[in-house]
Image 1 (cartoon, rainbow, N blue to C red):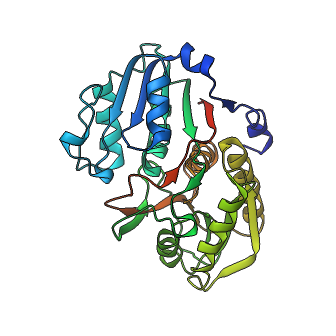
Image 2: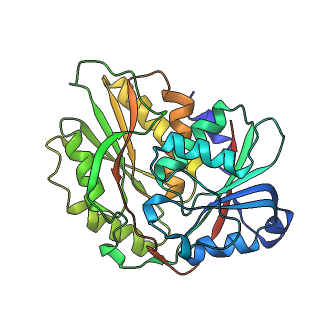
Length: 316
């Protein structure tokens, strides 16, 4: 696939308007979270069935959850088991023809990625995903997303590559976000690989872009092979632009003699969505893996205020 094969989707994102929320979907899924930008869409969207998914990473106790619309999901499970059991409990059926919408705002990044993998393999033709931006992050450049230490850095299930022994041409593409602890662990895990920084620009706001740069500076020495010259940019809120930019970077790396490619999406959730779309379209069966620094617990609320909401039509 070339960059032109993504280009027809670049203008596909749509604002989540009141009329679109009233039009609704058959099935609407969201990860339960106290954050206003998760609560408001759940309240406003019309759907035949709406389901809250309690995530183990947020550590909500039963008395903290809503009294209705909460499904039972495996609390000690990897992303494959969690998504598979959650969809079954939500009444999802690939053969039913039901329209499905997933609010990715509160889900973990590996969940978002595995949703794509699972639904594609289930034979779904299209699904809508929505995301609501914060006005700003709660502690500016000091905002942290993971609470516990990173347990391990591993491939996201469904995104494991068929790697080759040679490492001289290894490359690591990191989606630059706020959590310098997560970025440090990923870069150290692949410290011999050439580092490519993928920044969100324009960011959700100008101050957010500046804050993410401040966080990246703290891990500047983590990689011996850090390449200051290879910085690329994509949209913070358009996964199709991100997928297209990754496609362009991949073509350039292959032309320079690529051995193994590692990708780690640590910026916004739409950014992560773009990584997943690109991988499933171009990298399956290659010496490429999508890796992530897994932690046991994450902050329940990292953003403040209610920003713009977007709908992303995903076509498999």
